[in-house]
Image (cartoon, rainbow, N blue to C red; front, side, top):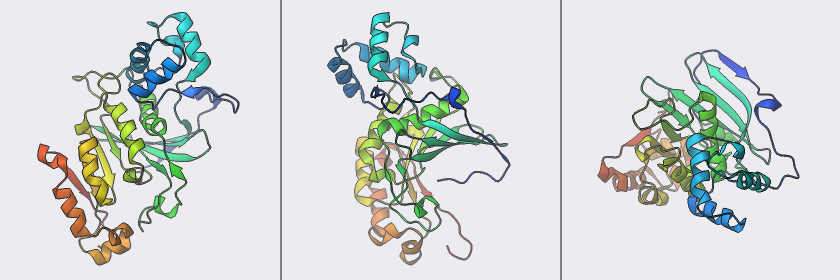
Length: 299
């Protein structure tokens, strides 16, 4: 997980009014994170017309609404039925930190009480939201704080896409900016807590929602997936998502990388670079970024 800049941080802890949470006995299903197919099937099972899926999708991901009552092109009785059965829910904001350079960091809590972090790092021409894929991590990279935490579980699609939606809420960036409009949150980097390729299916579902042109509508060229080097999955990223790839390298020989990034013992540098060379996206001028944390006296 990226470290925030050293400038002072303003920390706010939202009160109950800022985030209405469901009670323990509320069994309504969250519609965030469902694929288009699953959303249509869920509504049909509830006795609602299948065409409602397109309307609801647009309201959730284009307009960013969390209240069915605001879906003005949906019949009132249908809105009431939706509110009885479903919710449109984000992760709960436990704390938000703001740096003087514009960086914002959110500690988010999920319905089971587990937490993860999300960061937006603004630059002159972009804003990159760093999204987590797991609570904790199975990898033990020696310089990474998340690596000191045990893996608790994978994040679900709603929890992954919900992180970006929380960031949009914070910046007031709804409805989705049009193609020629300036986006404050222009990029997503899967570089937060966890190894995305060890939660591949959920990450794919979430990113396909993000890329859908009837919703959040981020171009695949503005999405980067970072891996510590899960070699067998790299080609699959290109085939299924075709997003930019980033590799946590951090050393140029196996002896040092075995220590810094222990997954190297399973898939050493030569195998990793071979997979990068064959990465499908590279044929379409996709960039592969090699991340390198410079540690004095080490690498």
